[in-house]
Length: 259
Image (spheres, one colour):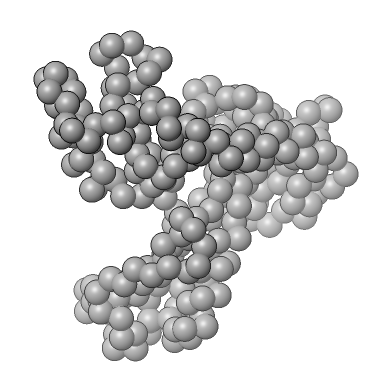
């Protein structure tokens, strides 16, 4: 975000706050770059297929810094464990020599240093005293986070059914004919969900809307122009190629002329 006047935004440094929602840590950062004032407002979380967080960030910025001109927006894909503690150590089902380090929830620089030290100690056979805290197979964590885990599974099942029903009639984001450049919708084609995107030149691109991981129906991310799975977070380009797992296979391409 760039203010027109380099001195318009007085927000030097980085300021981390709490917006009242657990797990969401917004921050504002201001400074100078190439002789211009630069201001970044970030924070909150969005699930795959949810674009509302961008609207919330823009509304907050316009309210507190009306002189700022919004020039860019982006998102990062962060993985979190159900108990918020990273998973670092020997993979329970991966065999004796398979290790994992994940679930840093956006704090990968700090977590990566910790994980490097921890994994090195495990490989040497001299584990750190605190290794159990991050053990991917920790039992207490699984019990404590069971409600969160069960809710996630419920949401997955809900998406699996509801999103299919939404593809009937005019589609999830309206009919194909009403798509503006940069938008996408899921409609029915040949009795199956079909993901359709209109590019900046007005050309249509169509692929299967069924995630190749476990079969959930995808949703379109207007900001990054990707198809995303609301169940497990897989992401695909508008051409169907895998951008991020757990899906491994691309989406089947469809003929937009048959829609």
